[in-house]
Length: 452
Image (tube, rainbow, N blue to C red; front, top):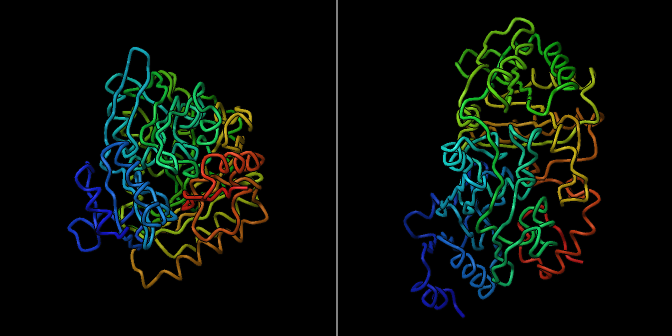
C-alpha cells in the first residue's frame, strides 16, 4: 500500500497529527534537544494515546519504515528521530494522575520530569527523576534514571511499578512484577529495545516541598583540592545525600572557570542543612547557593547550562577510581576546553541504587563509585570539529583511569559496540527476551540488543 493510501486509511481514526515534510509544525517536531542532530523523517506521528502509538507501529510495518521514538527528545545521540523513517512522537501525551493515598503516580510517555514533579509535589511526594528537568520520563527511566533521590530511593527504574507497553507487532500489554514479568525485567535498563512506553506508573516518597540543597562554587585554580575533598566526602555520605562535582565556566560572561559541588539532602530540612554544612564550610567558595530550596527548583538548577538547540557531543564512563592522577587529567583537560559552554561532571553513585543485585533488573551498573561525563557544548556549527575533538581527546586522556561499566543514557551515536559496557552480564538474557518480544529487531534505533 502506498504512503498516500495508508494515511488516508488511518487519518479518520488517528487522534493526533500525522506530519509530512511540507506540513506546518514538521520542522519544530523533528528537532530534538541536541542541535547537532539534523534528521528528517518521512513522517512524524504525534500521538495522543496508546491507540495512536499502536497504529503508528502498524503503519511503519506496512510502509517498511524504520522507527524512532521521541519522549522528551533529550537523548544526546539523537535516537529520538530518524532519517527517512517514521518518528513516533509522544510529546503531546501529557496525562498525569497522582494517588497520594497509596503514593503512586501514573504518567504518559511524553511527560517531562518538571511536569511530573510539579504534580507530585502538590502532595509533598516525589520519585527519582532527571537532574535536568526538561528530560522525558520514559527514556530516562527505561535506560536507568539517575537523579537527586537515587541514593535513598534508587534509580527511576527501581521505582517503576508498571508500564503500558506497545510491542513491535502493535499489541498493548502491561509489564509489572505480576504480569509479563520477564518484559518488566527487560525494560528496566534495556532502553527502548522492547517496545514503546505509553504510560509509566511509579512509587512516590515523602520529599519536600522544601529540602536542603544547591551549589557551592570555587575558582577552578582550586579544582584539585575541591575534587579531592569531593572524593573523600563521598566515601561517608548517608543515603539521603546525592553529591555531584562539576567543572564549568561561570555563566555571568566573566570567563572565570569554576568547580562546583551540587548536592541535595532529601530528608528533613534541619537534618539536611546540618549534613551539608561541611560542604559549605570547605575552602573559600566564590559562590554559595546551598541551603533551603524547593525540590522542584533543585531539579531545574542546572537547566540553564543545557539550552535546547545547543550543539552537544558527550562521552561518559564510570571511573575505576577518582584517584589523584585521574583528578589531574580532569583538571588539565578542562583547562584546555575551547568552549565556555562545556562541562566535565563527576557523579557519585551510592546507596540504594548501588545495592540492588545486578540480575534483579536489566540495569547492570549497580556500582558504588564515580561516573565522569564529558560534555562538549557549543553554538557555531563551523566549530564542530574543534569541540568534538576536545570531547574525544579528553575521553582518551582519561582512558587509563576508566572502569568497564557505562551508563546507557549517556552513550553517543559513535560508540563502537557499547552493548557489553551498557548491559554487562545481563546482555545474554536481554538477547533472549529481544528474540521473544522483537524477533525482527523492529526497535533498533537505540543501543541495540540484537535478537539471537
